[in-house]
Each structure stands twice: as C-alpha cells, then as structure tokens.
Image 1 (cartoon, rainbow, N blue to C red):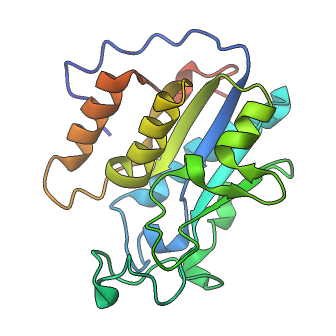
Image 2 (cartoon, helix red, strand yellow; image 1 turned 60 degrees about the vertical axis):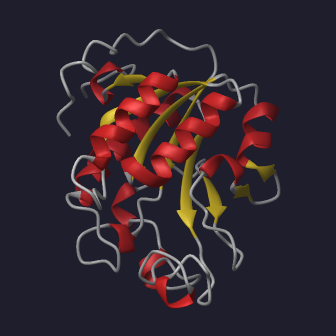
Length: 212
C-alpha cells in the first residue's frame, strides 16, 4: 500500500517497553477467493508471518483476531446489515490463513460472536479464558501495539482507534494492511484518520531484526 505524501513522514518508531503484535482478521473469507475478498489481502500474509516469528522470538505477545459470526448475524445484508455472509462460525471461510504459521504462543481473539455484534474492533474481542483483548493487554502490562491485517478501512481502523482511545501507543504496519475500498480512497482516508488520532505509520522493515 503506497502512503500518501503527507503521511510518509510519520515513520519514526521508538522502541516500546512492552510491545505486542495484533494481526487483524487474516481469514480465508477476506482473501482472494473468499466470500468478502480484500484485493491483495493475501499479500499481508508473509509480512505478518515474519513479524509474528520475530515477536515470538523476543517473547512478546502475538494476537490474531478473527470474525466469528453466527449464520443469522444482523451484520449480514440478508438480516438487514451491510455485508455478504462471511466468516460464519466453524466454516472454512472463518479459518485463519494456515500460511500465517502462527507461533504456538499466539492467542486468538474472537469477535462478532453474537447476532447483533458487528465485531469491527479487536480490542473488545475475547481471548479464551482471559477476558477481552483489552483486559489481557493490561494484565501483561503491554503499552504499545504493532497492528496489521484486514481490512484497513474497517477492522484494522476500529482496532487501532479503540487502542489509541485506551491509551496504547500504536504502530500501523503499512506494508501489512489492505483496504476494502467500498468507495475509492476509503483506505487512504482510514490511514489518515488513524495517524491523526495518534498512530505511527511504519513498516515491518522497522521492527527489530528486519529485514530477515
């Protein structure tokens, strides 16, 4: 994803004391061939795979969120919502991409589980046995998040904005996000909104040990 010129200068990445990686919704249905494909969505996979391996090597938390909708979710157009049916609980489309090759320490964040929950923000998603993602981050004394995934203009944006509102520092990995762009330019507008709210736009090349 090319950065607009007035965003490119937001690329300094101070080393946080307690970082975590949040991978947003890299699921089959959001990749080419899925029920709600994001253009080039599969291209975030190798970037996030390397990032997850790096975080795990440092002993830092890795989270992967997933949409996990019931079949009758009001999120879907057939039930009065916006979107085609996608990421239905237990289906192949809802599975995380296997080629992410998540480390065994990675924690799954489940969101959109109930009929009336759109599930845009990973921050309020549930980590099994540990409460919400927010609660788990706080329990681990995490202060800074690195975020990538799908899609820039929806679940990535809401996750980042909620994290910022809760006082976390956020670095957005711009080489590991792609946008739906329902309206042309939605992805760029979302990126501007996140940076204006306090996120830092960086790339995976700035992470410790990159490039590998």
